[in-house]
Image (cartoon, rainbow, N blue to C red; front, side, top):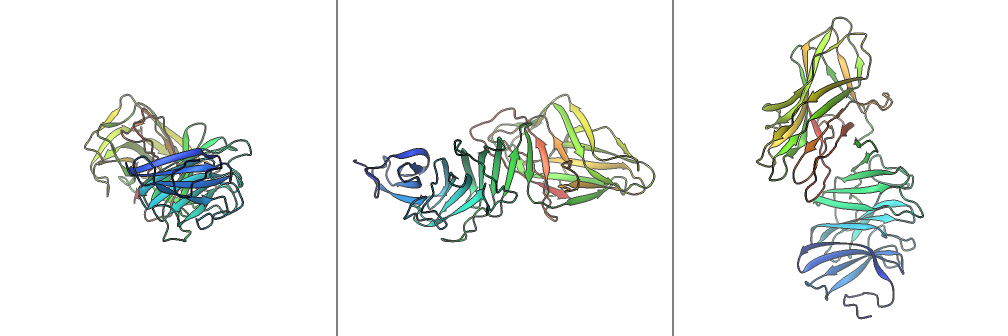
Length: 393
């Protein structure tokens, strides 16, 4: 008794599994679970001590306000909230009835309009490469955390109980208006496995790049995330850099000699101003060379990525030293490769403010797969996983 919010409950047990986001000292939003009705609720506080405001039933109970909500099944006992603006809050939450992950997109300050979307873990899930198998269990609740760079770019990390993996959802678009079901349905899921290799699947397609036709030819991948992202210097670390190259061999005669390098550049459009960290030894491929091949290079020291913030891009570049007759075709997300897609493992990357990993994509080609081993040096203030490669042809 004595609760102060409009439509609050004086009889039921509420507040388990809560999360909060404040846009100012007089505007806080609290997502929480109503155990009595097994529902997800949102409290919208309109003063600094939350003695005024309102409560809305979002999902899991009769009277729920979100388009697509359930009036009969439990929802939201694990949740996290982020609000790009006061009238645009996003809530990632667990659907225990379906053992799945959902996201609520609020279209008003008190969230009395909006949508809910099934992201992963059940039939009808919307994320590319989501699983229709349960990601939770009857005894274990899937925990989750959400962060939004903007209203159209939200990231969700969450635990898949059955795979015992940390997963990552990248939501690429927002609600087109109250009542629409557009939010998050064009995103991706990322599985971070027990070996800390990030498998970022952005589309079940096969993308290739023909390489080796002319001496001096380069094949460059450039990140679309700028480094360093904070006010301190970043660095590429010491240790072994391993390029696992999956390819189709089309060499008919002669020897293709090539190498690769890793570093950062200051002009992202063509990566023409480069600072190289490591360069591999020359590799000699003939018609007899089989795929895949692993090429390692050891960095004896680290490379500082200096401030000012957000002015550098990471890159990987393959270069032909001597051409052969014929070429190799580099395979990325090759469905015939039995999991041996091209990837690079980097020993350490320090990026102040947040940590980003690198996922290959091509702006003029279908999106592709890349694996990237990340052993992080430090984490500051908040964690965020973001980044794609763009391909310079």
